[in-house]
Image (cartoon, rainbow, N blue to C red; front, side):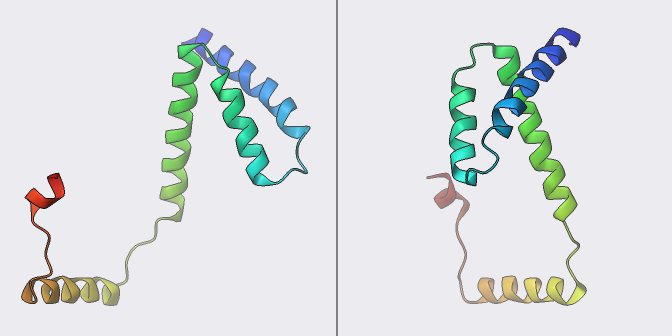
Amino acid sequence: MLFRLREVISFFNKFCKFKYQYVWHESRARKISLVQEFLRLDDEKIISALEHLLHKSKSELFEENLKPMSLNQFNNEIDSALDDEKNNRLTDVEDLKK
């Protein structure tokens, strides 16, 4: 695990140097550069670690932005669902599997 962590840190140190050379580029160009760098990777451990980091970061960001639904919104959702059922605007589970 420690070896894996060192590889990930080493990769990110190199990537950060690479990234800061292009700070003024637009976001899309940075994303393309990141993908190209990622595609050059051959080490499965680094790929797995980056994959884990991406999923963890996305999950944390989602949780930070997660806000509880208001009681009024909750009741509106229930009313809308009941109205959909009443007017036969439902999707059968078997249709979803197709």
